[in-house]
Image (cartoon, rainbow, N blue to C red; front, top):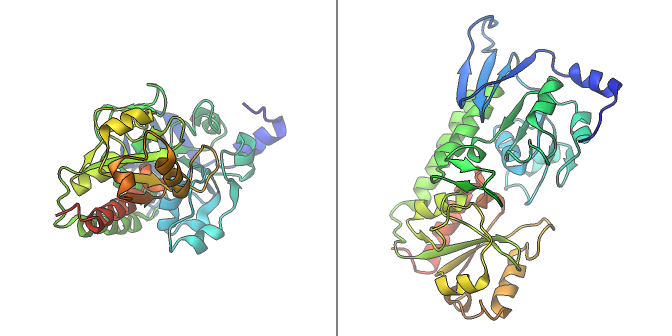
Length: 348
């Protein structure tokens, strides 16, 4: 971990003197009554992934370390309260481009701890436990020691998720969109914009209902390929792709594994022969076959995949990386998969 100079450490301690954070179990949120200034709604407490964060005022210089949580904050109209973002896989959705352009980007991938502190944050959010853990930007405790409270998306520590099970972790039970809605409400509550949070959740629920109304894709098998051509990361039963699959009433070709993104060989894929392949169309350059075009080129030329039903019939559905991770873009994934199934004539 980077070693801070005493001057930098002192400066960091002065960033958020009004913010208190202590470790505790549980999840959810609450509003403390003791000492609350009249009409302010603060202090506000959010119990999140084993931590209890108390804010005596709304954040004004938040740093969001993953695209998923950043897009929630932008969708809540909080661009003016963001001091920096990092770790991107895709362009932002339409409608958020202008707001996003006003926020400094600390790094396309993971910034250093010092780079994050240079933004003088009074609140740090992340989509993944690994981002605010050992080997990530910094641990939650490192930020907390400097007076900076943190928040991690509950989707990464709920639904029986075991991040230490290897790879991208596994889930003991299926993730639901309710967890994503809970994150939106948590962040809206932290920033004092609860009504905006409720409106955003209502709109996302409406979009899911509209996309899936009258849809019946029973018996149709889907395979989700996120990245990597040599040892592909394919979706297991219980992450965001599982939530999408259940919403449209289809089947996941690899629903028999609880690993979030197991690496499965192409011979096994050929044995499963999915009806439709959902491709992550990523703009980052970390793995092989990041873009959808690169994935399709691989599938039609590799001996184990070129005769797949979905490849021969060109049944591809393209999703952003964010739609394939638990985020508000997962709703976009529901819409696009539903539309794709209808377009292929596979949904009644």
